[in-house]
Length: 248
Image 1 (tube, rainbow, N blue to C red):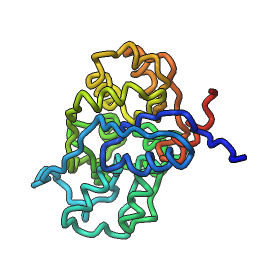
Image 2 (tube, rainbow, N blue to C red):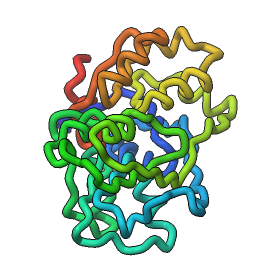
Image 3 (cartoon, one colour):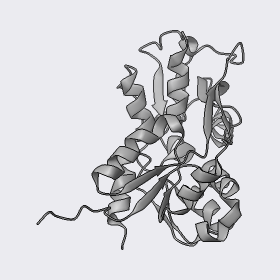
């Protein structure tokens, strides 16, 4: 008798951007589930021009706020990051992506994910007169920069991509409605999901939702979701583990 896999009989809606969805979708399939890829954010690389006042090569600290920030940064002919520069990843997934680009020695928060976790790092407590470059998407959160600035740091942004609401066909939306579990990885993603599936949003609100942080959970609850769970961290492995731990 063949053992039943943990996700057998479950359809999981994967809302990560198209570039990031495959790995998680494959892992869901390996555990017996059906992955429905339904990107709710479209990622487009942008030309940075002279937007940054401090070059990464001159930075004391460079912070990457997402996997997309890493991919977009290294897709251009950027200067090498000096060994003396402290490289910070906002979470495990971002750190893994940096390792793929040859930067395995990075600082990564363990107590919390996101900007809040980065701000808890002891290495960023005393940053007076430090040049810090934050590599991010256009229009990201200001918490990280504002807090580090109050600690005395000189902050520059390097915005290397932009996020857009993608289009979805009626067929794609109808398939998305059939999922019984949703994975959403950002506040903007939850908002966009509701926008794309607004035709039957009350049905969507009844589905189990897995998110990556308390901040995203509270946003989802405020919109109308009822059953929201948080994964241990932002990695695909943590999301899969949370899916398998769910009470059926």
